[in-house]
Image (cartoon, rainbow, N blue to C red; front, side, top):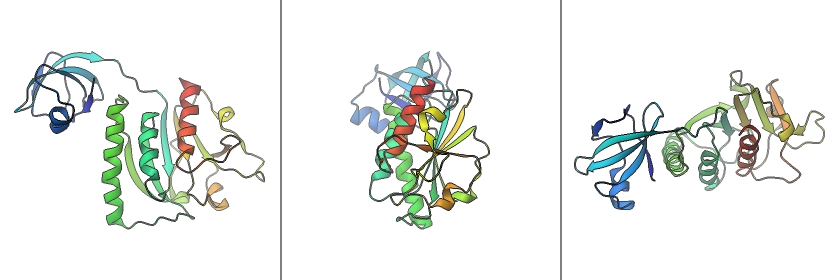
Length: 237
């Protein structure tokens, strides 16, 4: 059953008209009609099965409530801008794997540099990608997108643990990611570098960073988040 998000609070057995929902997708892409059912996530992130009772104006009747599939573990992904369409893939798959927030920071070795106008254009596209991925994977939430400055200027104190994937045998504190997770953590940040990697000053910029290895192979910048999110999901769920 197709899922959509609305910015209205819904209640069972109530009828709603003219919700802010993609009716073009419902009727022209999915080819649905009056009498068909869809899933709708409301403003409170509750999920409902609703029945389409009119197309113009769009009108639905709320039938029942569905159980949430969201994890209690909230994961924020910190990444720089990458070349080409690598971020499109990363955002889509990371959303499917449960990422809660995406923060884009200005890495020292970033190849891609964007002005404010280009950032806003990217943000619009990124928000469309995570919305569609949330609908497809039946998430109860749509991940947020935010642009930040340099890594050293970001406040990470709100997290239970902050993991930074960095492969350097000179750093004795390197540990395997899977063994660094703690079952008492509920709010986690994972940080990744650009194609050229981190500078050492970035890795040591915060004393609450946990430096971890991501397996025996070298992962691409757009693949590393998927690895870490998969390990987190397996560990906690």
